[in-house]
Image 1 (cartoon, rainbow, N blue to C red):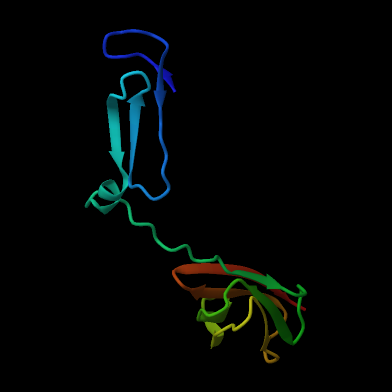
Image 2: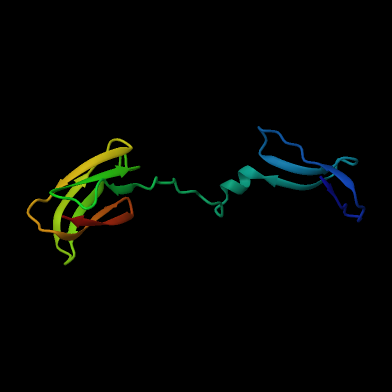
Length: 141
């Protein structure tokens, strides 16, 4: 690192020694071994102002396998393994036609929803779980 000393001299060589086991990093003047800056990672990370990261949750995704559909609706759920999802088939009037809770064990889960007693038209497939929601438009033949 090249920088300016406290006396204003340009081009002074500084070192940034690094030790993987140390918790501090110090910037030192190579000629005088004077330390100009020290940063303590452990102390900074342990402070009350340190950020604590939230563990990322994988976003699950719904996909219709065939649309328009006849008497059954085939849904592919990806990325929801180990989670609990609520699936609802909702009419355009807001009435819930079918409701079920699923618990996919694999990264790719295939779910079949039967609804033979309803005529042609549009219904909505809504999935909710883990603080997330997704709605798909389903066309019925």
